[in-house]
Length: 71
Image (tube, rainbow, N blue to C red):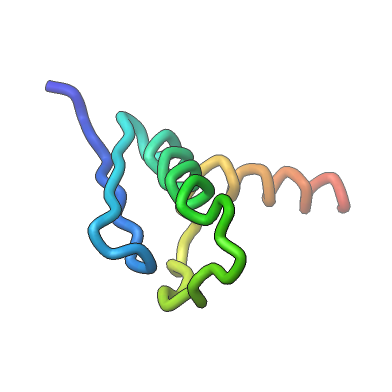
């Protein structure tokens, strides 16, 4: 059985997407948001606060690598 990660976008009720990995689902969510905002002169103000952990696991790894390079 294949795993599926579902994405909802609270600032756009009824908007959903998915991905087969957590990173793919996050990427699909970003794409949907970009498509929804494309051409909007006055996008809605965000109502959702950030999650306490990175949505994309590779973002945390990248941050750690950057911190290590800085010393």
